[in-house]
Image (cartoon, rainbow, N blue to C red):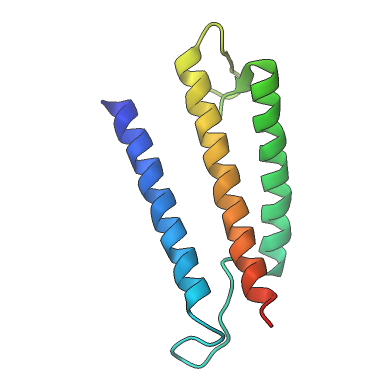
Length: 118
């Protein structure tokens, strides 16, 4: 039951994140206060998020190719989950990496779309 709750909350947060990005894209050039519409991240945040997103994408592809993923979290630092021995924690960490890569990519997409408006 706890696993179901974890995945349901991850999907709910992803849906809320998606709706916020769509609201920013529909908003137009200016918000209600007359200020220019800001993206989800600023210029420095864009670079940092791009670098972290590339690292996580590399970690995700490496995990899928090798069948092992390092634990994502403080409680199990240094532990490696393999597909053959611990399939549940392996797929949970792979799903979390995928979720982070998609969320970061979507934030970068929305920000670029707002910055490059004609």
